[in-house]
Length: 263
Image (cartoon, rainbow, N blue to C red; front, side, top):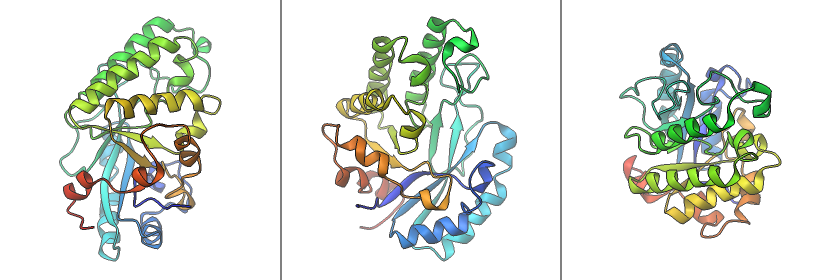
């Protein structure tokens, strides 16, 4: 099976919920074993406290880089502010953050992490959809956001109720992202989270491709063995037009140039 040249979405034990195997040092060694050229450590940033807690994580990445041929980035998966619902992030992005992934993890307008159908929370579904729309569009236009993380994770609470309106939001967001060269996350773990909605999630990715958005591969690894995992991505690629495994898993020239990597 083809191994990606890069992985733009990797978590470590610093996330607080990753497997104990996912240390910075072990992941760096594994990246070299896989002959990857670029790995982006993108730890969760929920608030100012979680950002401040990453100082040792940053130091460990610097130490690991000394003995690693693969370029290691100190990135971040920063939460969209769920209360403001306008594409604002929960923190101001620090200058040291090499690559910024913005993700919406909570139901817009609330602090609820969606692990059940929307009806369970007794929320106005139409209002949630509109708040989600303003969130996604705000992220797509945010000048410090390099990539929108797993763009379809909230599909389970919205797509079944509003399939046409939800997909229209993605088309609008894809056009905005394409206009200023923002990437979208082709996230392997998302297919696990969206079990039963794989077809719809592929429609979201196809919308991005059709709009001219570059999709970047991300395992969303939370364990050592998940670095470079592609099982779900490979299955999804078979149903997409205009993108194949060779294209997805090759490090884009624009990223290679940005981080001064020679082919």
